Length: 316
Image (tube, rainbow, N blue to C red):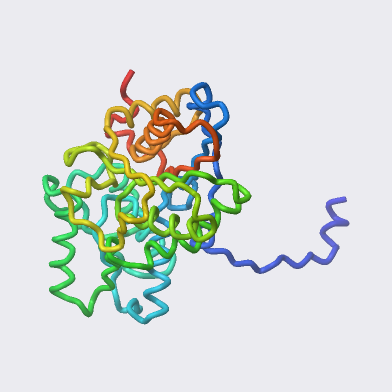
């Protein structure tokens, strides 16, 4: 049989030639069961963005900004991709830069977790550490100074002010949620970092059905442990953020967010990062305020494996 097969003419193989960038998006919705006793008629789903190839929701924005910059001529072969990041967008830039053949330089706070630092370095990115006491705002300021010294040598992606960030979610995330729920989504929740995920997804969902309740979330104090999220009143507010889009805006606590991600891991086998915990807290808050039925979709921006060294899962 082996010889007979060997003599047969090989069948043609389709030349799809996929790249790692082709795997960005189309992430699944995972059913969350934590709240079923409290609200049995409410279906809660997490948009599993940690299943993007770079491990986070930021793959979408980074790909959108890079493609837009190439299309408009702002990113050429001689340029280095430059931006400030708390980790996830940096990992996405680094992955895509390696795939497309661009150098990548990233300004990150000096206290960024070891896992995210190692991921960025693994893809060959150059890292510049900013003052850890100044957080993401300090990284933004240092990044701007680097760009001002050599504006011709860099494509400064500027994720906090680049409209291609939110447009990536308008074009993909919002459409996917609508299609995956067959248009039955009633509530959408997302945390605020750059604001791109919430702004772009909300604009698309509101266009499809203005009755969808869109909920934005942020930490309840300036000094918090929810990496990647901003306490807007105490931070440089991103230019792409539009607070008027939110039907409900909530501020939530770090400790309760941590507790909820630990529950999700131990009860449902889903390992997620800090910011998913805030979205889970937001679901609980909506239920407390009277939500009892519908289809709620929350963004789960990244996986918990990027925060193991932080002690997120080290509690009882």
